[in-house]
Length: 109
Image (cartoon, rainbow, N blue to C red; front, side, top):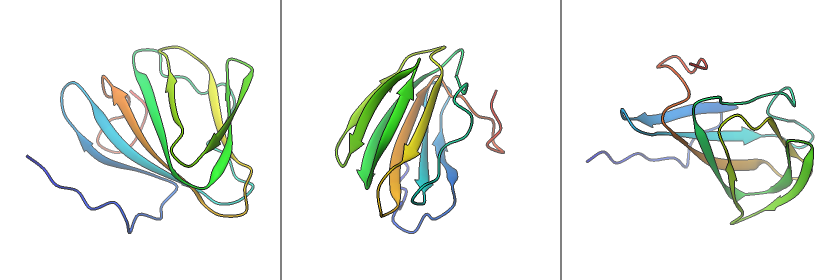
């Protein structure tokens, strides 16, 4: 068992925990910011993204999806995606990757 407090996280992207089969991370986007290039993809990992607070938009393979608190989005392996904060408050998401998509330093595998 491992218990992780997530409330004080303020960095843009922070890995919380990893096992051999899955990984958890938190992402915090300020108003008007995004997760990076629209061509971002995880060729070997699914990404499950849960909106903890705030609102925004996901662009997945060119399709626009509104995100709000409690939205759960599955981004399949190989789907290009970008997450944008379109609201007035921070967009905070909890992300799960299966299998892990990042190394211990937070770099893509």
